[in-house]
Length: 155
Image (cartoon, rainbow, N blue to C red; front, side, top):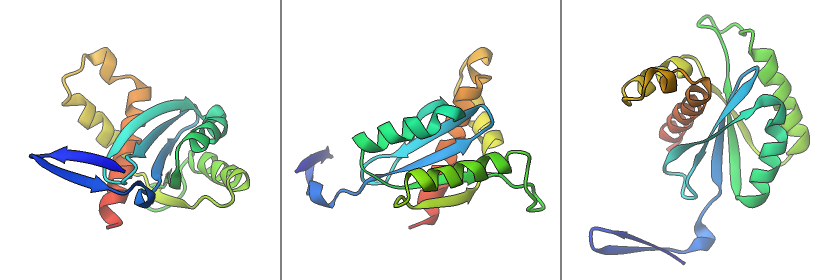
């Protein structure tokens, strides 16, 4: 049993009803930003940025240690719905992921503008310019934006 304390009230949650996390991936040629939900699938937070070539191994370890319900993958398209230069990279990952995790549900979500939105969000955080320009941070925040949008639209 897990207890949450808020405003002098105690909320008790039976842990057998807690669902697994949802993982969001912003896959790029070099790096992949990863965001995860809390176990109750309410809050999306940046988790890590991993080299794309090491992503399957990273996910294997993560999924062994944490219950995961599904994976949300950013699917890159141009504004006219044609594939981008990153689309084949994501398609290849989706195929590989399906072979390694055949029972794990995967949802493709539109990732248009998430990196631009992430850069804008980072700009208002008050970080120094050198920190704001770190691509690892942008990738992780873009994954958070995708995951948060997924959570808001799947209610």
